[in-house]
Image (cartoon, rainbow, N blue to C red; front, side, top):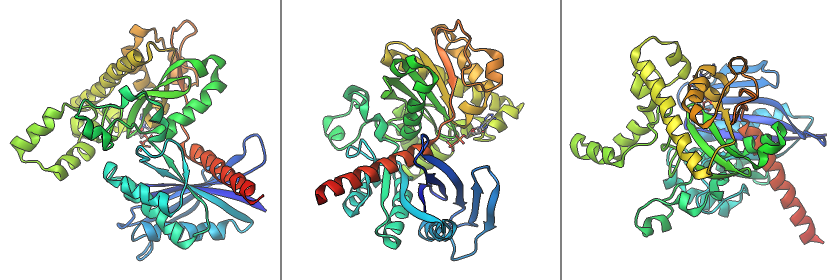
Length: 405
Ligand code: ADP
């Protein structure tokens, strides 16, 4: 009898999932299949691949299949039940964007936890509702199946209070208006990999650049987050695919007063029309911009890199130095050009990239005499969620067993 785990990452119009088999081995979690339903509510499509990337299922769905998140997760659940006839599903781990001030670690979900998570919707109105509707749907159909919430914010709870505070009147910080930080599952995974790259890295002052459609930096000290570029929301910090990153709040007041923009219009502008897309007027996709000869595409890339250079400087100040720099995320893992441009921006700190290692996407891309070792580490947020899920259900079983004695 085999044991399985499922990891769910629910977005606004998609549910991505991965199925792991649990072994009693050194690497206990082995991915068996992954897939997604995208286009939920609007031409949904179901795709499943095996671990080798071979397509097992690829089909358009028809109403009422995947009309909404509830029917989409029901379909995935039905597929899973028929696919793992040789075993049992132990638990489901969910990526949940916000744990607020309540959760600095993953948590086994019950009705009261779900109520707390629902109370956090105002902090992440674009993401949290989709995470939670999926959890609730599974809770309704499989009430005895353990579900674990793993938070994007939790890893950054180790930031000192001063790094979390805005200079606003205290009543706002008391109500939870503070810098939380995101991409925490990615940074936690990277922190778990660092000791395997070099024994000194665990204690080092490290800046990790997670550069994808969403992009942020994290300063790690002894493997813990002490500062990060995203703040109250995933809008802050770096230039992203369609998000503006760091912006003078005076700009928002100007847009409201002079352009009559309300909260919805600003949300649309800042989340969906800005960043690489806004500056280039061409695309949010880095590959498209790198391939373009348009001067606006070039300017968008230059701004992306410039902002990263400045924010790295800010995190170096928070860390009191930097021993290593790590690239991850779709751009960080795959674009030698962008890594080289960023390397050039931080050459003043002693970063020296080995051009051929960088071109080859090697794990270590700095020269031997570089003062700052520089790395490319593929992130794996799903594996991090799967590990947390196993840990939570094992802890819970141990507590239940000892209570029963
Ligand atoms: P998300 O934040 O949605 O998870 P990803 O981490 O998948 O995003 O990153 C997507 C970004 O990575 C896109 O801008 C894409 O163009 C970029 N990317 C992927 N491969 C390459 C590549 N070979 N060169 C440059 N950019 C790349």
